Length: 161
Length: 117
Image (cartoon, rainbow over all chains, first blue to last red; front, side, top):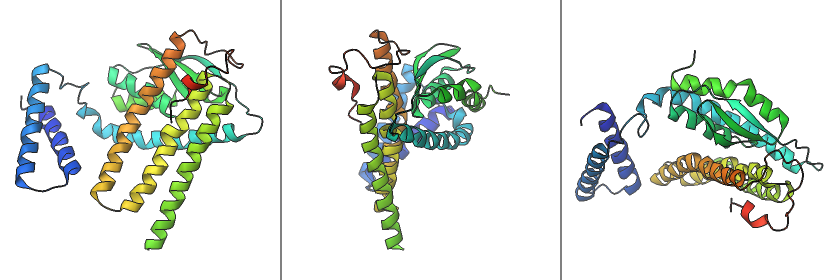
């Protein structure tokens, strides 16, 4: 019941409550604590506080991964922007399978979400070891096949070399 | 100092708004469902991020900024899920992702393509 994961869930919930309310009255702060405690107890009884529901083990490595992802999103935003505004619309839509080396479902979902978040590539179907991807340009698809993003998500997950 | 923040904020808001317009333009210009989804991705990521940043600069260091950041985080995790659901629905609906040309019933599929992004 009092594992680091449950305590962390309570801290996250209560922090969100305090920040969203912004009213520092004892009554509201205590009722917030009671509500968060209730949620944690119910989630514990439902047995959903695990590595999937509240992946605290990923926090530090995720802090390394997400800045890189933001930069990729900026780059691909500019790329798609230029494609859309180009008078001749020089797109070369392509779809195919990209290998996914993640072992956990959290890692796999992160990889698929990252693909969809970078404009120009989109995950259509997710299998255990590969992802069906649609890309707006052949170049965008080749970059994914080259596996830089796959490798970085594996690293974040802790299974990478 | 205030003026500099105001200018930066307005630049961000204008850039975000323009990106939203380009995203809408892409929805119209691109040939089929899957290509159009990529254009919608511009509004989901760059457009909303720039607008939220511009609004955060207007709000300063306050609880409003915290809420804007929370909105950004929620969009960041839910937008790709919605996009994936739409793409997968199109795939299951029998639209081939390898189809390079215009979709056959281009006049009719205008509304299902738009995500209101």
